[in-house]
Length: 240
Image 1 (cartoon, rainbow, N blue to C red):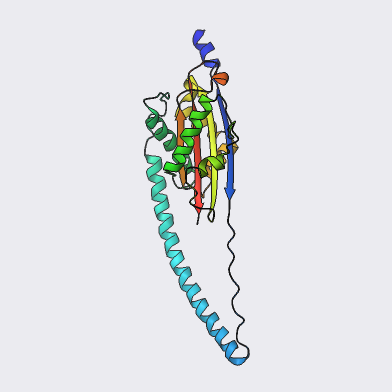
Image 2 (tube, rainbow, N blue to C red):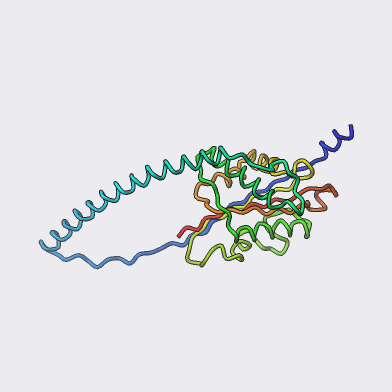
């Protein structure tokens, strides 16, 4: 009976957000073309030359696309064939590296099952993710926006991930906290995958970078004193 009460008292909670920014690029208009026969001939020659270049570019693109699809398929196969380690491990101060790796492995396997490339770890996103998880525990809250008003975008921008204001970007963030058996990477990722909003972040095709930050405790007022963990996963891509 005591084991049943313990199981029923475990808790898991999740939140998701996605955000993006874009810089519109304008191009200067060209000079008016010459009038008359010379201008028409010049334009016809230019169109023929442009068509030839477009035809050649199409063939190069087709070759790259074929090679890219083959490489993509190989990457998916390797990702799915590699077992994820430590997925049932309970977060503790001395195993957070293994927890991060297990969580990322499960995320990348879910992407591979849906035809998406694996995400790569970004040091800047890792700084944002770990800082947010730690703060949610120390300041006893669970939200994308900190009590200070710091937003996910501002949190990531402060790390230097977005190199300058002239580039576009897309960012996403998944949060979770759980207690006891529901604090493992396996339980957290399963909860994210079961949520359409969180799954949308996980499977968003343009994302290339990610990081996971885990605090080996849950927000005190929410967890009721039970042991647990808080997870933050950041997603990003810079659109140059």
